[in-house]
Image (cartoon, rainbow, N blue to C red; front, top):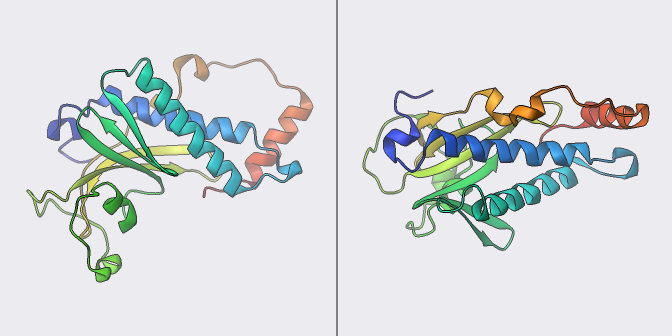
Length: 204
């Protein structure tokens, strides 16, 4: 974690708000996994697409309900942008250490054209350039070997390869409280399907 948290940079990025986004991403992914039917042809790609659409849906529902007033979702074709009050944020699947340049540029649509050589620049932790307006906020969703969300990381990235102000909600924040309690036992058939999907699935 960074010494400077997102809400220290912008008060709109309250930890409770970021934790909600992380939980919705985890719930969407788990829902897609639970519905996976490997024996009927479901693939990693299809499961990932379903998780993506369900995440957008959950965000949209939240923006009209519990998060009304501070959360917005702007769709542009198949992509979308999250708005937390006035702060723009982009979400992607992967780790925070080396976000692809396309994710950084997508979060700053008004930025100047970038030299293609920037695609080769490694991402490193650095506080500079401090006041460059090209810093953007990203939400990295990491999956484990079973396909579920293992961690969600919020941070700023710069097209020249810098990252800063990294924060991740604790693992317990990725599920609702009542979801952490033991639920009813599933049928043997449902357990076999879930186990097979879990063993075969790898993150996209």
